[in-house]
Image (cartoon, rainbow, N blue to C red; front, side):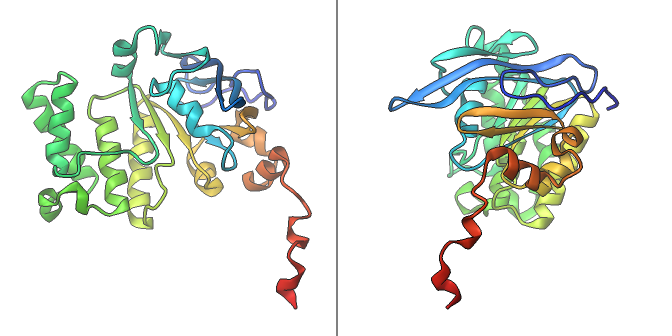
Amino acid sequence: MSSPQPTATTAGATMPAAGDGKAAFELAGLHKIFGGHAVVDHVDLTVAAGSFCGLVGPNGAGKTTLLSMAVGLLRPDRGTSRVSGIDVWAEPERARKLMGVLPDGLAMPEQLTGRELLSYLGQLRGLGKDTIAERAGELLSVLQLTGDVERTLIIDYSAGMRKKIGLATALLHAPQLLVLDEPFEGVDPVAGAMLKRVLRRFTAWGGCVLLSSHAMALVEQLCDTVAVMARGRVIAQGPLETVRCGRPLEQAFIELAGADAGAGEALPWLTR
């Protein structure tokens, strides 16, 4: 994924090109107010085709709200979201065919097995019976959800198993773009390593990933571009190396997000 690496941009600018330079995902002026407060404040973000973009920010930064508006789960007060040029809100059916989405805390029909869930969702997406069976079998095998697990109801899945079947549902219809909100939260290292392999393979084949995470080391491992969000705005974005500017991403994030440098001196009674 060789591309020019301009300086990291600030809020209101777009992500520099990665991959082949074409935009896979374009968010323009997305804005949402809750209780008189701008949770997402006129956010612009462009993710290039073939890139693996990490969205990082502190709790309450607006990441989940932004992604929910971007994929058509929450209507924005203002702004647009486009997937390969298709407006998510004006042409939702066309846009959804191109997207695979894994929201944080995804609710699933818990009295189904993983294979039954994939079969059900495949039918909802209009896939043929043979296509569903073939893809479901491959996904369950690659994600290590076969054997006894195939007879396990989702209600009895572990956190890691839920993340894996959630990723399977997002991949089932062969999307061009994956939007993943905290996909590694609660996942053990073995399952995490397997999920990383699947996502790297997806981008290697030309897919695009936008991943939200609190884990800076994970973002550094996987992503070629990064956007830093704080107080409802994207305050920096660009190639990973440019945004962190020779520092660990965690340090760059703390400086950009304006963390309280004196917090470590609080609670003096703990040292008595």
